[in-house]
Length: 72
Image 1 (cartoon, helix red, strand yellow):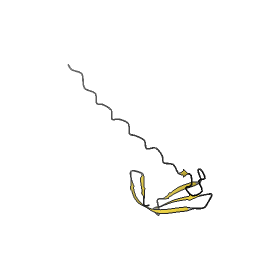
Image 2 (cartoon, helix red, strand yellow):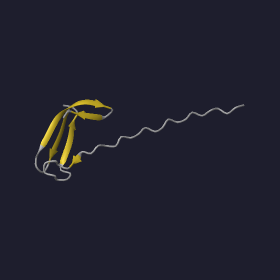
Image 3 (cartoon, helix red, strand yellow):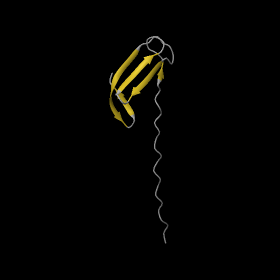
Image 4 (cartoon, helix red, strand yellow):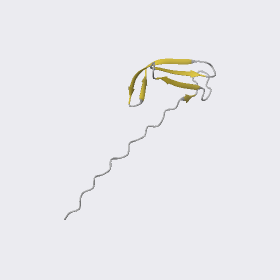
């Protein structure tokens, strides 16, 4: 009698790397001073510098598989 064929295990799912939430400011060039926040309740993304107080906010247009697309 023949041996039963074993089923191949599916490959493990690839883990998405987490995106950075702290950046250097393009206005004052201070490192790690810009902090990004996403408000899922109101669908607003915001980036603000803690040194020169510059800020930018925009609406979030789409959510697909945990990735955010932000209008520019």
